[in-house]
Amino acid sequence: MPDAPGLELIRGEVEQDHPGAILDTGFDRDQPALVVDPAQILAVLAWLRDAPGQGYRFLSSLHAADYLPAEPRFGVHYELLNRDRVERLRVKAMLRDPSAAGPVVGGGGALRAGHGPSSTPPTAAPPTGEEQLPEIDSCVELFPTAEFQEREVFDFFGIFFRGHPDLTRILLPEDYVGWPQRRDFPIGGEPVTFTYNERTYG
Image (cartoon, rainbow, N blue to C red):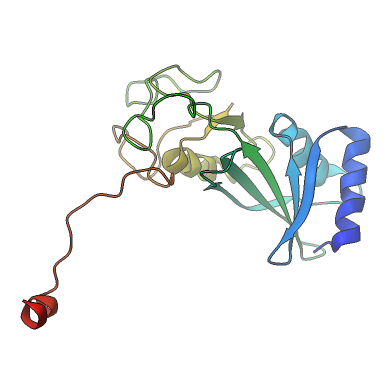
């Protein structure tokens, strides 16, 4: 993986072609990361994939994190791999929560109109509804393996990927309300009572 000077060299080369695209660099658990302007995420990913000397052609993982109460709240993480050099690089785009100023419906937000079983595929602008979702461009055309991973992030975090060919829930039912991996999603369910506890503690 790139060391600190190598990461800054990558940042400088990206900035030559895409000024302002890299907002920050850093290391987390010895993992190098580029923090990218969400508006330029596709340009940076394409540059890292295709630029001479880079060759990060494999997207090994795409996932999200909720940093509530921090703002920007959401992070979309792209784990890229150069298989020839066995070298990893993380790209991170931070997204603001557009519904932060208004009420959050159902704790994690309501499933918006346009994402139900009878909806049209959300490949253009996201439909409007009770809650505005954070948005970022889909990278499926650059990395086809992102198709299911972006759907999973949408399913659990409510992050909308513009241009995704079939942005629907992938693990939860289509009529499920909310985004269960958001930190403000209400934790519910019935308490589990173990018979050992009943016998021992009454």
